[in-house]
Length: 151
Image (tube, rainbow, N blue to C red; front, side, top):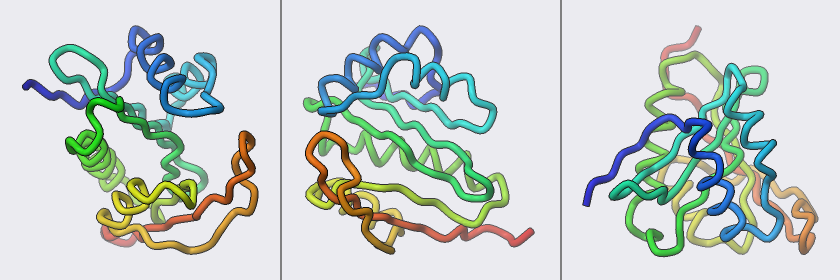
């Protein structure tokens, strides 16, 4: 099996959006993905396995903090280290630039994702009540400090 992590291209948007629709009850629009793809500070990564999209990660810098905004893995590829490979590529990019740290929100019921983020050094720092529009589930706020040289 051949796996490649690379920067998302405009030609990936249809496949990314299709995976988004299969993964989330309130999917991002193609337009929102295109906006992130065009953003100067955005990190937009895809994982391809045997020439098929198996996952993606979207992150962006807000002031001096990186925010992981969206991460999805095709159901058939879950528990196969796709998300870990995407996170490792994300950290390789972000650690080259001074920042305060990393943050994200995750459904409190998403034990697999919480476990993944904890394995990368994220800790729980709070809860956003009724964060998700579809079912008003709470979001766990997670944080990881930057381990690089201070500015």
